[in-house]
Length: 139
Length: 305
Image (cartoon, rainbow over all chains, first blue to last red):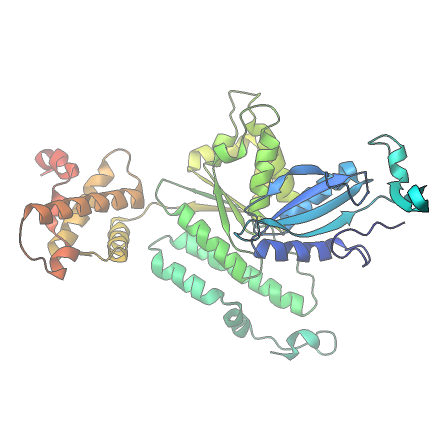
């Protein structure tokens, strides 16, 4: 099951050229771009690992792409996302975030139904991937 | 020239090189280079050649011919104060106008910015700088300090390896300009053959002639809304020829320092003149006395003349 998180996730995966254009837009807005990766695709997992530091003072998107390629080399079997942080007063938050790399086989999620009091149904999702220990989820 | 690109495959379109030149907007930059930089004839010549090469390359690509972007990594050698940094800034702009680099900014660094202090510190530091320089020009001042011959465990070597790799793989993303004194740069290239072969243009910055330095001085002072009186101009000319004999002469930089001190003395003189109304003329004119108070005259004054 294809994970759809962040911008563009209902579109086909962006090519490097398309990523380059998006990143260039972010840089032109003065946002700091950073890369994160994880192998826990649960939508509530906000704690993705950072790849290096956020990239400040960049003028050209090619620098970000360089890092992305380096990150893919090591974590190419995990999810990698790219987000841009706007430090301007009043925003001070992430303005855009999209997935730039995903595992070959996305296992999808298990839906748990629990019956509660008065036959009320509670739902929980759990990624099949997380059955396996960290680092071995998508190999 | 609207049919230029579209009709490339049907019938060979006519492309006017001078129109192309005007369109690229590089003319004004070259003109500015000519106007603002005094002397440096060989440097300007080489920049023109590079501009011509890139322009022809652009036209060739319109015809659908192979026009592989040339390697433009450069090395600027010359004595202190000969305008290496100034030209590097211009170079970034020229290359940008010609579409060779995408952004046209200049990132000026020295050894400190590239080389780390402990193991594992260098690579991220160098990469950080390279990322910032992407799409522009990376200017490495005194590049020979990257390589310390006497210490084989120096981290500079690591930085050099990363630089070489990026210079090769990202040739169309950034231009690396290395600058430094001629003899040391020679030694540097000699011990790093990888650099020598990847740097296509070695540009030597000659020392300025006395007349050039005078013209530079006048330009500098005019840019600050000052002017030299006629006597002051003569004094400055004399100062230049005397200063040249002395050690640590740094061409244009020495002149800038001399003029800074002259401004200081002028302010002092106006202040000492006490309580009277100043005219605009008095505020903007540097007199011969402001220059002749320099130590350079006192030291040589007795012996030379």
